[in-house]
Amino acid sequence: MSKRQLDEVDTRILEHLSRDARMSNRVIAKSLNLAEGTVRGRIKRLQADKVIKIMAIADVHVRTELKNPMMAYLGIHADLKELRKTAEAIASLPFVRFAATMLGRYEILAISYVGSNDELIEHVNEDIMTVKGVRHVDTKLAIKNLKYDYRWGRIVE
Image: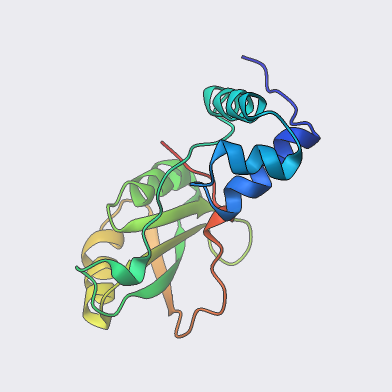
């Protein structure tokens, strides 16, 4: 399957869906002066081509298991010889919500939500520091989120 270029109609449909994925095809079609079937067909094709995935995203503050969720940034120093395996091991940890290899200060950046300082310490000392190739972990807690736009992130299987 070759990667299909999005045209202006696709882009305008995506703009509507990114604001409200529950918006009806009829409302989108009327807004864009298109036939409802055109919008429905475009959305189905975008889904089939794996350009979009429509899903619900829960607000982390509503999750009952975390009474006071804090976003934790974990800057991980790792051995370069083991970087790929180490990064994959970090990414597979159930509490890690984002993981990437980096250029700059850290070899790996991971992001997680924690409910307390003790939970963060436990994750770092018992889970991350025990991964082969991890040398050191710098932790930072977000104290006040000023903006978090969930629409920027790529959905992964």
